[in-house]
Length: 458
Ligand code: B12
Ligand code: SF4
Image (cartoon, rainbow, N blue to C red; front, side, top):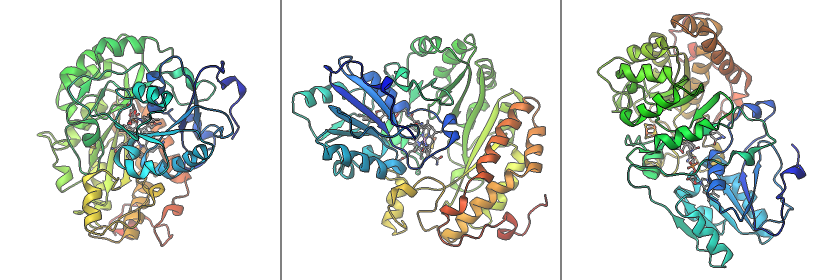
């Protein structure tokens, strides 16, 4: 890691200086070039009045400039970044520099964040940020600035991507067309904090921002870009002429509407991520996943349109016993998404799941760095924590064996190369990482067949 080069120093010194920090929990090698930048911080920068010089420190790419002079430091953090964010905050505050914490973790646990920060932004920055900075300059900083989402329209400035200059990311062309989600899944923080209704930006504003993009690869960071099909369609129609190649997330039920699938393909969508969550039980029959069509049928529609479909499953719900690993693998073999992804259920603070597990005494700890979907942080109902972890490890390895990859890729009707490339990348992540470092106890690496006997051979 290097310290920030001088070219990224504020040009003028007579203006107030703001440092925005994206904390990193661990060092990344060359893969940092395939990460996305913090959209949160480019939006905070865009909401900052022009009188401020804004500097970004992305700890994935460079060291934090702890010794430099700033008038304020703003730090973002998801839960797994919180501990590192607090360390950074403490160091700046020790020098008397006021620290503002924002993002999902500070939003759900503002009291904890205030042990390390002078002030906390609860919720979205846009409505409160200018007032906060003015209060700071006037020496009247309050401890909390809260914004509550309302209505069905989202107004945000265009992200200030130039503060990312000098670093290599997968792409800096990220944006959100909408926020909010009505589905209120118990393991997710989005509905409580971004609101129950889909708030969309004005399609013309989105398209105008996209017209400034000079590369093809674009990522839409919406939780469910197709959540309100009638509001998504004008955006997709407008994108059709822009020549972008983009990926995003949605819930699979969008594929019930053939027009939407066609528009998605025409808009330049190359990959879409959907949460199927569970092969059986309550989460398989949730309004977001349950459909009058089979999931296999809906997945086929998307893949037939030439779009890579990534399906995410979660292991560890209370209605999951040890058979869930095997049944999930077999289910995915039938449904044939282009890319399967598995996560360990994680009770993030601020969710209904967290409250339930805390009330039941089932949280193993509150070591936030380990709340990242790859570690078991709670006591599962129908298996041990070790079994859950090892089943997750084995399931990932099973679906990224070469025969499994070839079988999935060849089952599509088009985009063989793109599908194969995505799978190879994912295989690298699964087989390349030191999964044992996350194991709750027993570090023995199991194959799926050690957990369930009915495993197919290689
Ligand atoms: C896109 C996305 C990703 C992307 C990109 C992340 C990146 N580089 O920033 C990818 C796919 C890489 C990703 C990965 C993960 N993600 Co993610 N991700 C999202 C998603 C869908 C959008 C994030 C986003 O950009 N939102 C738009 C911005 C504008 O919103 P925002 O971050 O909340 O910021 C606003 C306010 O919070 C506030 N704010 C934020 N920071 C600051 C700082 C200051 C100083 C101020 C004043 C204000 C402020 O102002 C902002 C503007 O309004 C969110 C869900 C969501 N709706 O937010 C999940 C979400 C953030 N991810 C989540 C998780 C868990 C993860 C993973 C840990 C999952 C995993 N293990 O794979 C990883 C961690 C990766 C990492 N970097 O270490 C959780 C976090 C939960 C939690 N309590 O921490 C979320 C909320 C999803 C969920 N269902 O709960 N993610
Ligand atoms: S559908 Fe997705 S974004 Fe919406 S509440 Fe469920 S997990 Fe969260």
